[in-house]
Image (cartoon, rainbow, N blue to C red; front, side, top):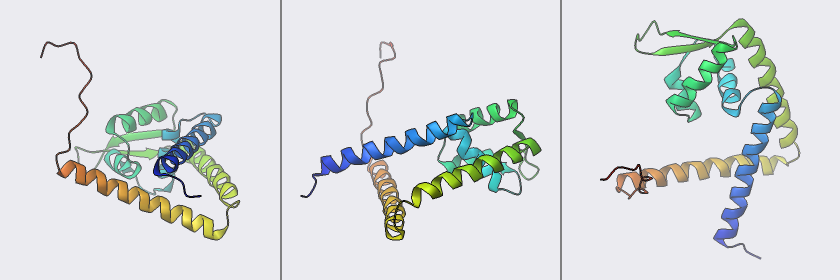
Length: 164
């Protein structure tokens, strides 16, 4: 029996939120947030310091979120940031030696967890999952851009108490 679009969306939301919760819980058990986990994994891949703006772009996070996470990582001695030598207006981030060891350990553990989980799917299912998820992301990004270009009405802002 074919599912209605609402049934598909409800199942999609359940899956999306469920995956989000699993990653949050996995990260929390290791003493980090999901955003920290993502930033650590990306920093671990880098051989050179990376601009905070590049972290924002690649992880689809706001400047405020990245700055807050980097603040926390600096306080823990895991990361350090400094002004870029190439662009004095830009701040770059790198892992400390302690941070590099921590990021390697947590990134390796995450990949092992994900590989074990994905191994429960057939090769065809894994390929379909990744290809379909990618296609959905691109379709949604394109649709969002179409809305923005069409000047789609935005939700009204919450009442701020002003008399406007």
